Image 1: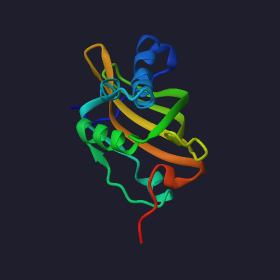
Image 2 (image 1 turned 120 degrees about the vertical axis):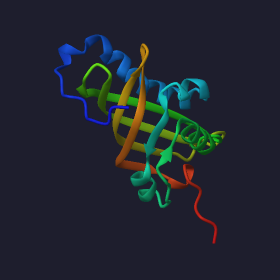
Image 3 (image 1 turned 90 degrees about the vertical axis):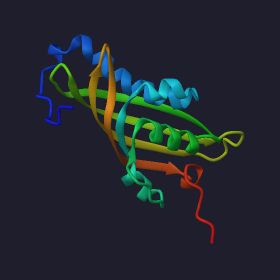
Length: 164
């Protein structure tokens, strides 16, 4: 795998790939919201990483960087097993592109509600920085870093409060 950063390109030089690059992030969100593991997994390369460590700290818990598509999917789907979620992805911007690799910036608003009890919620507004690579005609996420901008609601909706 090429570990060098892709070179920046102007938006008019990536019009065909732009939609496919952003689609990887849409598959990530929709896979969770629709409880569709196959769709979710299609967003990640086999050796992908997902870094949610910063938001987790703000929510009062410690998480490792998740490594590998299987581990990422297992952890996310275990966490959301009892939740209803909606992910709104806005301002997706391809920030670098070389035809085989790209980086993407986006804002993601993620709403989490206990299934069957929508009187509680946790709403997160996050910045996603994503490195992707082309796999045939599909783009997949290689690295995803999530930073929390703000949150509103009950953190125990996503991570139950530790027991004494």
